[in-house]
Image (spheres, one colour):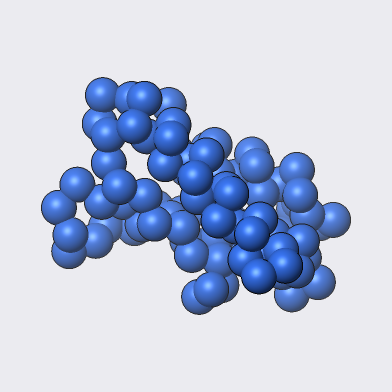
Length: 83
């Protein structure tokens, strides 16, 4: 499963302006880890992060679980506008 596409799909369902969502994968120095950066409009920040970060932590859990089901089994880091 493409973890970036999964992350983008989840984020786009949460925001009011799905056209402003940008999700990209970046390399990390850590072995067996991928970094996913999510850029969204400032108005949608609260929807994606959630109270006390619960929503974004749930998204991280879903994407990490998807990674563990795949053959790659990589550690996933998701940042939303540096959150």
